[in-house]
Image 1 (cartoon, helix red, strand yellow):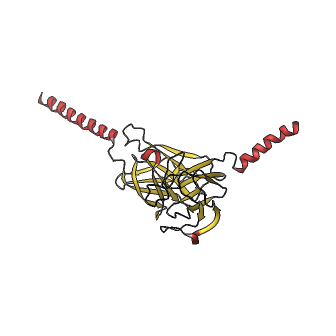
Image 2: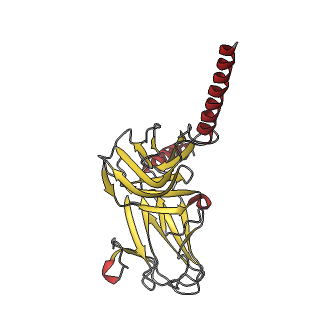
Image 3: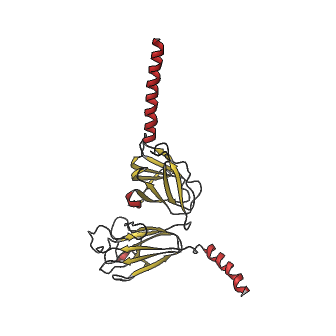
Length: 280
């Protein structure tokens, strides 16, 4: 009995050290009607409502795809295909559910870092990707961004997944319509996943990493369509990430405009008083 009790802490330390002690399972539902190529969306992430088929998890986490459709579907791993629809030649054999019908599901555990693309062999327009990144369970945030421009004076919060940190000082340029983030250390992740409030930057359209324009993935359905999540490719040399949108919080937000108005009124009152004193 004493031996068993002595071994339990060691087992616990091994589990924590392996990085799988807090592994989670995420569910993506295949909605009814998904077999129709013209359907509104083909996936629905249970905890967030994201409908892109794109999900970010950590080593040891599992993803379960549940079939709520009336048709058969598969979850089959593929190599990246770019803009074209995937086909049998793109399948890479990493995982394959086989056909599963309504009420059934398929679960796969992701132990390795990287991007794992998948599709339905019967409906190739149904495709997505699982991003597996480091730092399990670590969602970091930057508070007070553009506090001088926000109406409440508190600024905006940006959340991100990364095994390194982004500097708290974020450069906001309303004229360029850009936000610039700086990494404070080296990252071993292949992607930076970042969630941006639409009030801070609307419709992010272009991203530069270390001054070079890069392709990125975007999901504008986050938090009931009030934020946009970007998945931006990075590497160990990444130090600066600049994001451009169709608009960045105006140069004169509510508080700034109020301060400007009060300043103008004060100048007018002071000028009138000065004039009256001069007349006396």
